[in-house]
Length: 100
Image 1 (cartoon, rainbow, N blue to C red):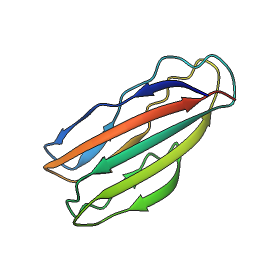
Image 2 (image 1 turned 30 degrees about the horizontal axis):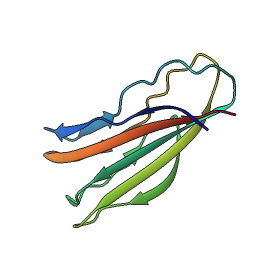
Image 3 (image 1 turned 135 degrees about the horizontal axis):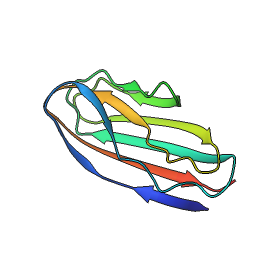
């Protein structure tokens, strides 16, 4: 069961890390935070957050780029996984936290 979900996006003016932002604090230990990133294919090299485990990296590409990462978080954590993307990239990112 998902406990929290955020889905902002934007346009990266320079190559930088982007995130959906912090979720509300988790309510139990060992909850799973999953970050989902997508853009419409700008030929970027995507790099995941070092605090999470990268699972899918479909980049660089000219049509769509995807990145998925996850990590187990403790009680009271406010997960905010990030992905480093390229300049002038229009992106979307979601964070979902699943209860243990």
